[in-house]
Image (tube, rainbow, N blue to C red; front, side, top):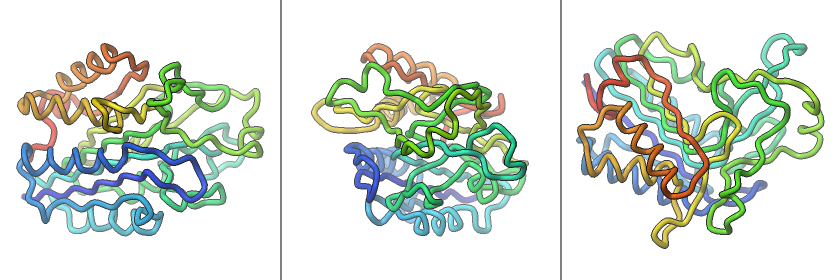
Length: 272
């Protein structure tokens, strides 16, 4: 049985708004994995900021799943901007959106990583546990929307910034006045169990925030803090505590967990 983790954090972007807490998220998760969850340093790879190009992320995703076999544990954590574009897979008349993660060299002509790409390239054999943690803005499963997310009230605080890359006007106008069923990252992706953590619920934004004088992703900060304090928490228990902590701190985002019951009732980052 083996463990592997890939962590991506991007503060600086070539063409979209910069963030401030994503590098600290990577450091926080590295410490959690190696100091609390039993990972060895060589089992964890990270890529950040201007090195986290689309190609660099895709190459490391290939490393993450290469040779995976039953009993292995794989972790993918992404902190950075998320967004949406029209679903271009299959019938062009389908009213859908592809959710996407924004690499350092993000542009609106295809330099991004879509949910379709993740579904295809994060497929692993049965018996592998895949834990995916996305501290970025993207819509929840089954939602129906009429545009693109607007910043939540917390985002008006200069110390709280949404992790959503607003598409340019030519992209936005393609969807004006339409109801668009949104698909969830990795939905129906794997024969193997997947635990998918989302930093915010449908049509919300995830906060890049100053906490105790340091910028972090609000979701990642409380996720790591609570696991350090109580490492035996099940995923369901952890989700409940993260929700409560975010609400108590005044954040409007509501995180989500999509996973089979067996994973919800087990602690995260554990070989089974």
